Image (cartoon, helix red, strand yellow):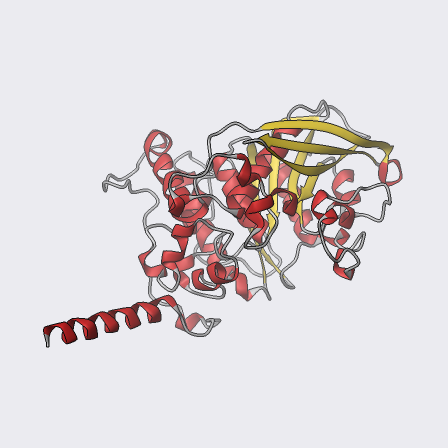
Length: 419
């Protein structure tokens, strides 16, 4: 009887665990957001309150960075990887003479293997001194940004079985990259296809930069796609800071959607990025997970098991047990400049959760005497708010638009003291 009772109890516990790991329908109703309590970003692991910039920088910041690495994004390997850069093409009259374009093959080598990524750069021909640089990934290959036939296909494109897919045609993502507008405002653009770094599929690690490092000793905290993409942002920065036209003190990392998540993680780790921009990054990016609104940890780890470190799956359907939330990630940008953007119709990404995350992260900016977001109430539609921390929610859906870019450049102009 004791054995049968134990088996029954074990079965009940297993069923309870399954229910906890499989949440109900996606919630889009604010009235159904659970009551939650956010972990305090300004309380150390031993309970010590953080009241000074020195405490944050020398103690708590490292704790937060380590926690996110071990439990969400994976620990970035410390091993050395060689990066060789070879200019393939240069056009001093790109975009009708507005800019010079460069196409540079980056070859990463480690553990007896190599991975190639094709970098595309545009910098304005009319400029005074060095210029600020937007660094970001594109989704469909460098050729998708423009109708210029001289722009080469990214290496990942050469491995695709169906290259005639209309979604992959030249110029099909140009609306997300208004190059002429950006260059006319005195900014450079450096981009490459994110799939060159880690092909976006569950088995993509076999062709990714993760294979260039020794295997992780801790499988639960091993880095996967988001960690690799963040690493790739920093490698683009490595190239940029060596260019005579680039202002190395005015580097901007900008990412949309899944690349917004990676941009935030890159900005958290690499302080060379003076402005960090998240566009519609949602779950695992800027949005608070404990709100359980729109996409949740269960949906994202089930659909994209290769994005986060394995340890993050323990919070699927169990967000209440998270010892952190995404305001921890945003706080790591302080005292640099942070911008978070949402879209009205992109409820999957939880715009309110994105805003509240930036609001709660603002407490760390205040340690430096800097002003973040002052109110827990979101600003009206299409009315940006900006101090050291910027935010807007615009009309429309999940995308990057000219409106977004103008907001970002206005924010950067102010950050860099440009007129």
